[in-house]
Image (tube, rainbow, N blue to C red; front, top):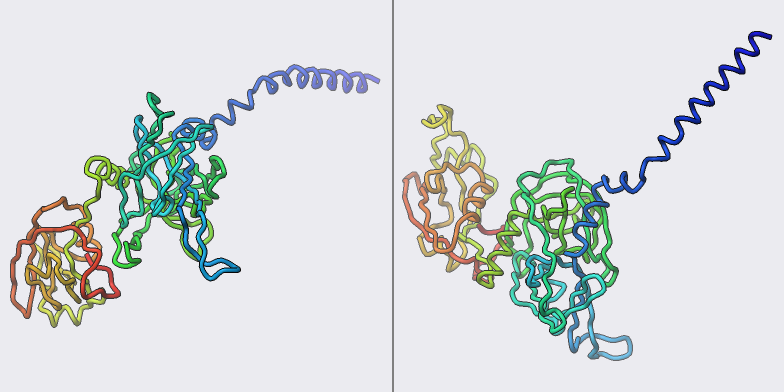
Amino acid sequence: MLRIYRFILSALISTAIITISLPAFSQVDPAAIRSDFPSISVFEKVKDSMVSITSVELPYSGYGRYSAYTKTILTSGGTGFIVTEDGYVLTYLGTVEESEIVKVTIGEDEYEADVVATDDFFDIALLKIDDPDAEGIEFSPIQWGDSEDILRGDPVVVVGDPAGGIDKTLTYGFVTNFRDLRLAGPHNFDGVLISDAIEIDASITRGNYGGPVFNRKGEVIAVVNRLASGSEDMNYTIPSNLMKNMFDQLYERGEIFHPWFGVFPYNKLDKRLAVYLGIPMREVNPDTDEPYGIVGVLIDDVAATSPAARSGIRKGDLILELNGILLKTQKQLEKLILAMEEDETFAITIVRNGEVFYKRIRVSERATDYANLGWVASI
């Protein structure tokens, strides 16, 4: 009997403890937990900086089902984001290209906008809200983040209008890798290299092109650019540091400068060919006390009318140095060229038929048309 009383007493004490403890759980605010989750807090911070874009082409000429030729109104939509308080908006070029009417929707309000500048290489357009109803309004611009601080595995939030007309859809994912991305260019050829483009696995569609990618602080660390063909949930974005520079150029001068040398590198330089060309592989580099190895960028062709052509660079030349920097890869040469400003000059050292030559060259704007288009992208 005593054991039974002890059992009942123990059960009552346990029940009392549980009963007393329950109110502590009920005091937890679910909203507080959700606000700590990055995508929730980010969306609340950036939603007023996002715009849905509607563009109208009048008239659109195309083929109809019952007519060989027809004219109609073509309406398309996409994603954009506000970059200044006075209503400048960045978006994907394809969303507004050849459109006669462009409207942006912010929350419940719709405004007309003008296309003030575009760039074919980076596929971006700068809009300006120009509507009597927008006079005196201070818009909410996004905050730029530092893409150099991004690490693989960092969470990202993508907010946009993926289907053209669906208000502010949010997807969530992570930074999965950093890869080199070559944009297609104006003629789907010879585009600009994006070094260390940020790869994310957040779900996006073409309607997200030109839209921002946010970090957990609600800062833009990249801009959506491409879906990876053949790979599910693997998408390429342009780093924010580069995109901020592109915006500054469009905003200040109405165009972007694309540095260009005009050479087509040969990417199969091996030891046997290096020996034939006279590259000093066995000599010791005084800066590192190590053998040079295979160095230099071998030129396979030169774009007509380019700075390289004007300076006398020929097929078969080997570029050893640029501004005193020993070149080891094609990517290294291209990154050095792309970092240059308008009218900047640089010095190169080349090997031609066993002889060493020195040249000084002025970088120029990348041409969109030239005579000897090849299959390899030029630098």
